[in-house]
Length: 201
Image (cartoon, rainbow, N blue to C red; front, side):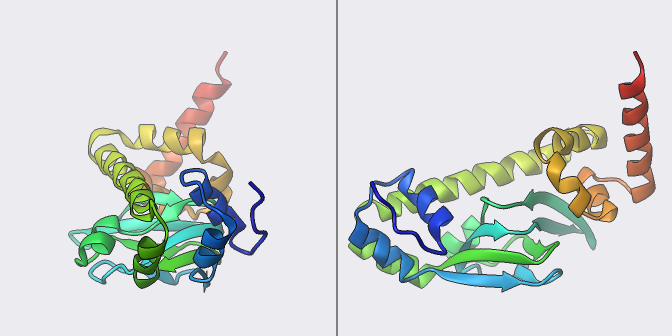
């Protein structure tokens, strides 16, 4: 199927990988999408707010984090191609349980909850599609929360090296330390030890 070439192309590709859509349906979706720019340090969502947007990262890096006794604990880093939202807050109209903040300048494709409700009325299968996306976000968050509890700092850092090594040069060390759950100086020791182990025959 030929796809409409728009500024929202990557988001549309993700949708059409799950749901077969004709050109009029794609046009209806594009008419309701918007582009959102965040400067470094700005928030897509703050803990305690109500989430009424779902986002698709087009450019840049964000972090999701919680506050635990006043200390920030990073759940996940988000990069180009990722979907972001607090699915519980979005679906149930409850306060968000975590924050999403830009680490770099970020460009997002966003869809409001009101727009999504409109699409559900005119596009067969839209609610099922939304369900799949939010199931993905829920499982991803659950895995990351379990990792915070069950995995050592070294194992969490090795996960970053294996799955998101290309992001490390753009993420400040203090954020990496928050992600693995240690102080910055402890992270430096972990990195040094791993480097030494790699150099051994």
